[in-house]
Image (cartoon, rainbow, N blue to C red; front, side):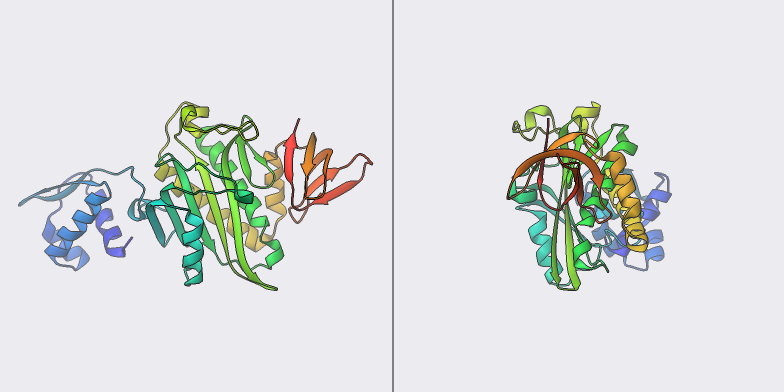
Length: 325
């Protein structure tokens, strides 16, 4: 959002629904009355209901629940994440545009978000249903000062962000299925897709893709036996504001990301294991070479899966599909 438009919304909101004259706004923002009028029209396009009466001025009647660059950034309590937002009503995937923007030099913390993805994807290329205006379909561009081998830990950081957000906002009990799924009552409510461009000892950028089902009904989903889906609305019997969820998620992400960069993975590991799905239970692990069973002990200091095998030895697993009984 332009700084002028942000200041304009601030002035209107502080007037407590009283009228504020065009001349007052013009003087405060040091722009022409005609420029004020143009900004008002742009705000109306975003869903702000603004009343303008000659000789009285302007006032905000209601605020929008529509996702846009403006509505995300208005009231966003972050220092660096979301300072640049690219919003699309419909897109193939937010990840594709985020890669393009990152290659073109997009700054750390840039957000790509869409009302709908037509070719949304998850880990291993699985299709992700991205219903229009019923969920959060977002990619975050990061330029972290960590070595490339630590980048997968950002998936686990993001998982704790989403799990914490769900618990705090809804009171529901989420679980994290290693490495990138968030479940409620054993059904998938969110997924994370982490992609990176790096050299041997330096990350150029990381893109964190987040899909969170918010206001879908059960009839919206094409269910599979392997991956049953759910939404916050189904589990809580309540509709949720996408803008509030997005802003809260970005604020929490900034806090947890900073802690990870400053202090390492230990706090992430501790919190992740509080939400870990099937910890201390028997699971099936499917890798490229074999499928085997073991006891899921938690995650290692580097984020790898810790499994106790039939020989009572602990194995580290870095890439696998997890199934349960």
